[in-house]
Amino acid sequence: MKCKTCGEKAVVNMTQHKLALCKEHYLEWIPQQTARFIKKYWMFGPDEKILVAVSGGKDSLSLWDILQRLGYNADGMYIGLGIDGGIGYSDESHRLTEKFASERGLKLHVVDIQKEYGQSIPELAALTLRGQGRPCSVCGVTKRHEMNRIAHDLGYDVLATGHNLDDEAAVLFGNTLNWSREYLLRQKPVLPEHDGLARKVKPLCRFYEKEMTAYAMLRGIEYIYDECPFSVGSTSIYYKELLNQLENERPGAKLTFYLNFLDAREKGFFADDVVKVIPPLFNCPTCGQPTMYEGKCSFCRMVEKVKP
Image 1 (cartoon, rainbow, N blue to C red):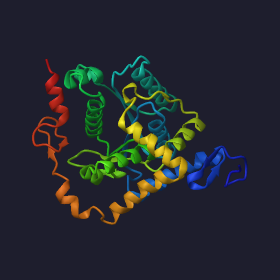
Image 2: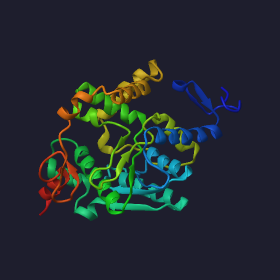
Image 3: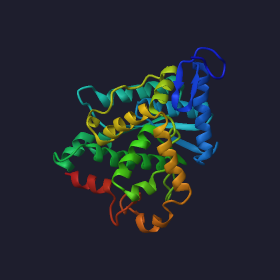
Image 4: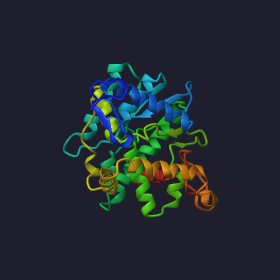
């Protein structure tokens, strides 16, 4: 198969786009498309300070690489979760993130949850969940809080995450199955800034996971291949597997599903439900971050619960 741009041998064939590209033109195409998505969804401008949440995985490191190539002022933030899982998961992801930043002369902020709050994510989960359920909920609450805190405290305008199309489609699928209208109303590529907190954006939301894998490999980005050990058997992975079966039969199905949802939002499909479904946001009296509850936010209540 030949590259559609130059006619040389193609290394990537994107059936869903009916597009095959050689290495050179594929590595040009990904940043070009990213720039197009940034502009289309009004994510950020050239003079804004961007903080990229990096985990050591292919998506977040690739996003940081792409934004640097596009000339944006983008720094990184790594959150050490203290997860081992028999494979030294957090240590390895931290090492690869530091290596990536050091080799490119990029600024990386590192937050260690255990040093900040006295317990790692597994320890916080054990204390708060008492063996009931996975640590994922505790991890999610903690990461969101820390990303907001660091972006706010260090004066960043934008917080960028590496969520790809597979991630977004799986979340959308789960929320649609359960008709979680409040979550459907909040799912979009850009969440506006709120009470001093940075705007949240997902520049990779229209790229398939396999497209980002190809980008990372062709760019020579070393990333952690292992999934978080706590994610095994998770609902989100199950939804991804179901959507992959659909995609294999109908290439482009995931992208169509996601884009049609965004189009429905844009055309006011949910307009009548906005006031009824989305509850007002309050500000946590302890940390100041927005919360759906009057009183302390989920993170502050969790930390208070585990204090000696």
